[in-house]
Image (cartoon, rainbow, N blue to C red; front, top):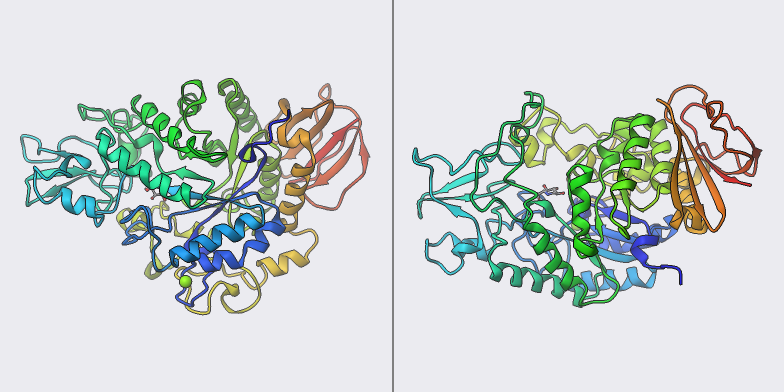
Length: 529
Ligand code: NOJ
Ligand code: MG
């Protein structure tokens, strides 16, 4: 029996809900907006949407500061709007994945308000409170991921609380079993409403060193890097006890049929794969961000694909991510031409692809004027390029004002070229990046070798990456030119005769080739004889 598990076969599309589609003119995207765009997603051909947080929140970190794990922020809509979004998505065979933010809540969550009331409040231990160091300073040298100390002092009770992110995002204490039970109930709340799974925020942060030892300095740090990098995160993250927690979380997911658990994890490959869990009882998909972090160089990418394949545990299903709301967009990192090559790579590598809304339009970095900055990280460590607003700007739908995103004033500016770079215009252009994404998705769906086949590196030079996918004797060769001049496989590496199924330039098809020449920035999918 072939394995038809949807999250292995399908393609995940990330929606940043503030920026996808506004339906009520407040300039901020919402659930009804997403619902009105489901036909587009079905047309594009993706299988699942992951929606960044939509829960009640003071929005200090745009929803990653949750004030109620079982509600919907009125700005995004109502519970009815949520239920009808799920219903209508399912009617189009689109799965719905929610963002679960277990490491920290908002400081406005009733649990934290209670926790800070007094040292012996029953909720005190739900968060991480410590006495000051002997000099009155913070309990250790841990730094917030957004800069500055990770401890804030609470005058009323004379202790510090820990926050890996903003001070408005106190870390929950996952060593406390009541916390686990309450959070697992929140998962069940949404699973009962029909959601198909979760992307778990900073899952590698869930347990910290019980002794809260100082982190060691990072010898590789320089002042151009975020402050968090001054120290190696040895004691503040990736603690071995996290695996037990993740296993329990997975147990909750497994109470339901056919749901998926995805973990956000920024760690080197050897540590990343630990999050599949013992006997694959951890996350189904620990997000693989290697393509986001890699230098755009064929040799490096081939090496990390091979390393990743080798590191996967027996039966562990791979996955690849090209962009998200925290990292500069792919077109901003590698340029417009190479973004097409990247799309072909994402959709032909072995494992579940996750794409980020707007990348299918080739959206680049949108410059945000100082007075329009929204991201708290940019505010904390300004002017150094860490801010995330440039990759969170509104989706561009058509030629109408604000590109059809809103009738009001968009919360972040649109990209300057929105009159030409939008869904409607790119749909009409047969060789647009949008049509390339659609064709790649269609090809992946129709080609078992791409969906489920084996992976083998064929060759990698500085600029040419070649790999083969194979299933049931059908062999697909993928050739990617990461350079600016013509390329062909080096002598000795020729792969044999075949038929071109797709070029990133969308102007070659059904051509029989034996040693194809790739134009600058061209990628080819070739079915070998
Ligand atoms: C990772 C999320 O993707 C990011 O947007 C957020 O700021 C941090 N976690 C904190 O929740
Ligand atoms: Mg709105």
